[in-house]
Image 1 (cartoon, rainbow, N blue to C red):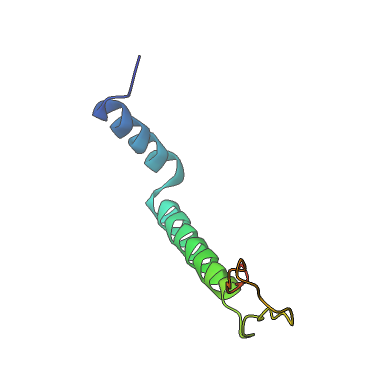
Image 2: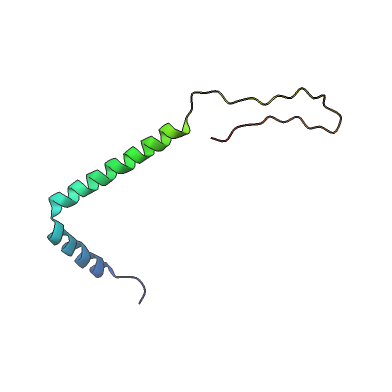
Length: 75
């Protein structure tokens, strides 16, 4: 009752090809590929920004126990 054998998958593939035909399956595959490519391009465009990161400064005088760190913004 575990996984299906190769014969089960071949029968499923044959039924899908008979129902939809190879031309429609080819179109579905190319549409899916274009959608994934568009999604990746959209994610790449959204992650970059032209504005430089803001710098946090303070006018306080540091004492011996203060650690000087640089703050970065999340992207």
